[in-house]
Image 1 (tube, one colour):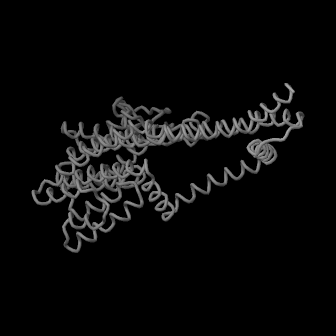
Image 2: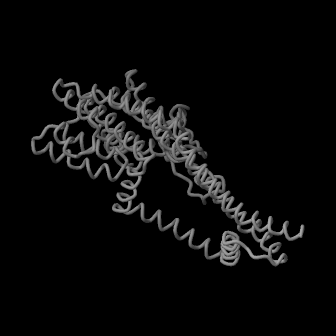
Length: 407
């Protein structure tokens, strides 16, 4: 919230001055008029950034898919009730609050709408929030006069996409947690446990097995060069993130994930669900097939699959059918190809793609639910190997020490 100094006159012509907190100057003028005052000047007070304002900005949550889905559904409800777009946006500003990130965006959107620009142009100023698919469908809705229906479809699409993404993240959460737990356990063993046993074995003057010498050598290296290991780990983390930000690096990583035995099928089925759902949305909204396929390619969220799908718009531009061009990519399962063929022949492409999306979304849900059971044997083997190394490296010398004491 900003602070504004205003000057206004009442019904008797007397001058009134004061300070008011509001999201913008137009809100101050509106409040003054509602109080039977005629605004003369409204000036924002330029103050230094206060601690509470800075803390609010640092803790401001970015706009998620769930927030965008809620905004789309609320805007649909207002437009469906017959409220003009400008008034609907003003109502949503009050609902979300002008101090939030979405509220700030809606304030700028309202200004653009007030200048006579359409909603699609106002939203296009924020490409990081409103993706090309969203903007294109809003533009189609404005052109056809079905903006409220398009917003309803977008809200449902974003809600389903958010659920699917949450399931995929859940699939990766379990192995990541196990890997972190094993890493922490190894650090504790190398820094605290193994050095204590090393002193005990050194005082016993016994011949140590190869596993024990390896564990002690690795522990000594960790204790002596921990700072170098930490630097290498930090450099590797930032290097990997930089690698993923590069187009070819992301392409290589996405291709690697698709070829992994457990996660590869899950990622491919998630991509098929996104492909079907997005194609259903753009086809049902009346987007031309060529432009629609360009939007569908960008909604898969896998650079390797996107590179294979880039041939679809070019093939359609050459006059080929969607089914034949999709078959040429070698990426689509027979089920999707059959649905594409039936949808093109019957004119019900959006309905067929909805069936494809429903099927693969259910498959993704099943695989995520069974992922823990599929990964558990691998984790058991890894933990069993670590336990064997520790047992062979620590307990064998202790048995030799016990034998020496008995003798």
